[in-house]
Image (cartoon, rainbow, N blue to C red; front, side):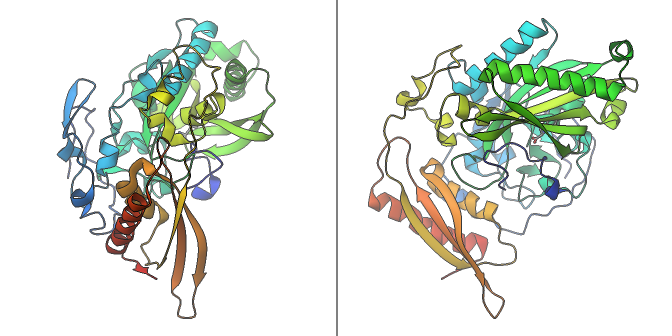
Length: 429
Ligand code: PHE
């Protein structure tokens, strides 16, 4: 799903509101059933055509077999390509732009709140639907719960779609000041700023009555003011003396809720979402008398601006011409594109079926072309007199690292056409 220019705020768009199986490597939860909305056998063939990936993964010291995460059953929609990203933890590499940015944000909190914030960057990305949705009050019918938007391991377990999935668990564990950084997973469209795996940092701070009583302010206003002061300072720390503005918005887990925008290179850029934590979340974690704030920011979105990185796929590149440009602790460095390879465009038209979604199309294309696909864009859409709807998509293929041959692209496109027809039940025109 597309939001603003960059990916990050699944919950910020108001128009969106909007077999018992637990993993020994994750916290155990009681049985909870989420209705399966995954259409029949859409991904049944995926094992036959996906790239082979290593079959066991080590996550936080625990071994996870691929067949626990990628399965041929209707409650599972995790493809091999996503499994292969689990455990990569780009945000933990000090020489990687995402790690450099994470450390720069840590520096801000360490300087301004010495020894206050507990930091987590190694929490398991496989979480229960309770942690990902219920614990942060995401309504039962919210679009983010759909199989079209979220990767389900089974009907009760997902790949976290935001770092807010850890808020309640950490509050229950007694933490009152914390930062959580991690990889998050969302089924989405394809373009230079959207990738199905990206990274977020969550921040939470809890206050007790002594904090706000002396101020003469009510608890909520006190927390909101403190939150804005803290985040304006963070934006200045990262971007220097920039113009900023606050926009009122909606999140299920905060009230009031805000977005911070900064004026950067001739436009307003949304930097993060935040707000005063819903009282219900605090109450459930045994903190009735407290008030708290929370924020969530997308690391790629900020890193693309700070390091001049033009395409989100580059974060995953092992090409030395990319990786060698960044060093530990150096936030200001501007990325120099090593070379521009030409894109190749292929159009594809088909009559859609009722169950067709763009996210499913993008999953098929990524499954075949991997990081060679740069964009999938709807360029024509009409419904004929018989009520049949036709879509024409333009697929841009381009490698960040080399020139692609005509033969290679034709082969990819041929396989995409074949898979789109069989998996998505559309009729090619
Ligand atoms: N979880 C929200 C998102 O992914 C961001 C957020 C976090 C907003 C915490 C408010 C408070 O869009």
